[in-house]
Length: 453
Image (cartoon, rainbow, N blue to C red; front, side):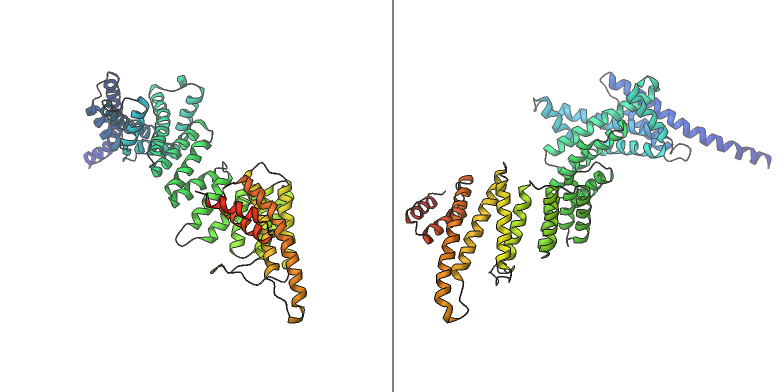
């Protein structure tokens, strides 16, 4: 019985020593490989030996949660990636003369399994052994003299991976592999943030842009949310998530409006988010909510012409309703004249601001001209309520229609100076010249339309 007890007691420290020995074996084999790499003749026998040893240590209770174990795994995995990257570079040398192009192609062609593995180990270290990672980060910022030789090597691998991750991202983006580019821009941002304690907004933003180009809804939502949660967001992040929710099948309108609401709170003066919210209100026939929204925006920024443009468009649309299915005009509302006046007032206010933005100015001027044109058409087509008042109404209609047709012409002419080959404007002017009996101008405009490409 005593002999059995002695064997049992001896077994526990032997297992612990065995697993620590695995880490030591990985250390020695990795150093041997690095020596052969330095000599220009990397020997994968040593690297495979290091991998086998560290993989064994990573599944044992005594060593699997130690930061240094994962640091060795990260170094081994990265060494494999770097070996294959160099092989790819050598393969391209005879056919690609430009060094930068060769590098980008190599980053695009080299398998990323080992790089991914190294990156995952760094993330694990942060969770499992934050003090160890804190020491590494401190060494990177204050000087590596405070680190052991092995820790310096790990720190340099982490730094090198940051650079490699950025190169991979750019290479994938250039190759239009936007899904992979998104992942690696994010990884670059993560490594920079973790190593230097400064949020890498640029690479996180590039991850969002790449996800958008890939049209990958899951990644759009994931990476933009990370920027919002990390308090480094811009209006773009909210807008991208809003659009992504609406692009789902079926669209998730509730989630879209919730993220838009948060975006409007975070960036209350952002034009794009305001437009999205206004568009939503209009799509839901909530014109008054849209107008309330715009009124608040005008109070905050009374010199922004786009607010007046959209407000004018809303009143214009309310005055001239159309059937959404057929596009046919519907009966005018009871407050038609009031709505026309409100639209006119807002267009004029926007025009008075004389925006340097040609698109804003064109739309304001064109819309006001179109408003007058349509209002003239309203009088031209207005029918008398009774036969007895037909003559009176007809005379009034003729006077009013001519009045508004003539008011429309100078605005549409000015719009045409901003966009000289805009066919709809030219066609509208030709018709107005005919209605107002300006035959020479009508003929000239007709000739211009015929000469359009």
